[in-house]
Image (tube, rainbow, N blue to C red; front, side, top):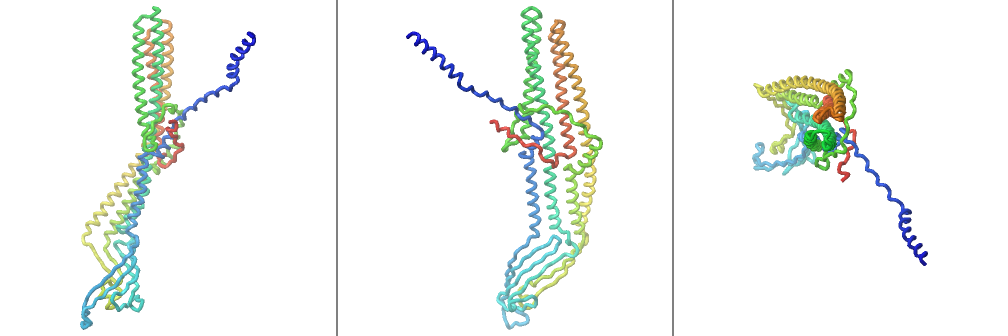
Length: 494
């Protein structure tokens, strides 16, 4: 009986462990994938997609369409319904007494940008009959209306309405230029801010590593001081260095946060700026090949055509040419020919059908027109000089960006060499400190020199990539280029 009881107890003790061993083990938790590094292409794609300033510049396209419709309104057909009734006494038949006659006109009037005006419709007699000599129908109770006028000198081909229409046609290209200019400026500003953010993050990492080294040394110095190997004053020196580096690291953290806030102004999502996370901060890419002389020459020619500043001057010159053509046309005398039905009812019912006229107006002094011509010619001369200045400015911008690339590249090479030497001195001083041949102060000085050298490398690399962005801006590469990356929604992780 005791043996049976022992077997039962042993089986009960074994059963949970066996059940647990037989149960399938929980699957290991999958590690999250590393964050995709933020790139300049992605930032530019965000700007193209949702930046308010670029959207605001895009509204100029709608304004350009509005100007076009407004200018076309001067030439749209107009439906006219006119009723004329008059009471008169006929001079040829006074015995008839007072008569009331009239007509109702229904016609469509239109004008052409070249200055021609025309009308077509019908006229119906009120309180007839009437004597209609031309284009009558319905037994003299109606008349076909055909009429028009045309300028023979002033106003022919060029007139204020046609000039406004031609200006409105240039509103859409001008809107494209403004959009391109805004896009260029936003891309350049975002590139500079992006590399400032990356540089601030790298500088913070350097300060944190330096702080960790100082904290570890403080622990070592405290242990050696307790053992009597070094003076207690070295502990104070090591602790003071820790506090100094901690203060520098806090300032570096503030700089990163500041650059992060500035960068968020280029990353808009649903109408609000979006903060980029620190785990998406990329490393500095390698150096790219400097453009050759032939490539730079081709880029300068391209910049003279693609830069929005050059296109803006070209549009201004076209508008001024329209103003100059209008001013010269206004110098001509006014000679207008007209053919139209008689409008007075008493003339209409007495048998007068169509009237024809030719009017000549000759201004004597022409002060206004001569002033307009002089002003437009002066503006044309000014635009020629401005265009020459803009073209030379484009060339200087390209040369300046190329110089920035070359000097930043040289700075990176020299700074890297300086960092290599600083690390050699730091390692040697640290070895001497381990032998007791130097003090904590000299080790700290060597480490500060290394930190400063590493900071110079980071700043030189940031300036190098900002110079590359400046070169892209100078040659007008961002005026019409399409984004090459798909924006990532930062809020997807929330």
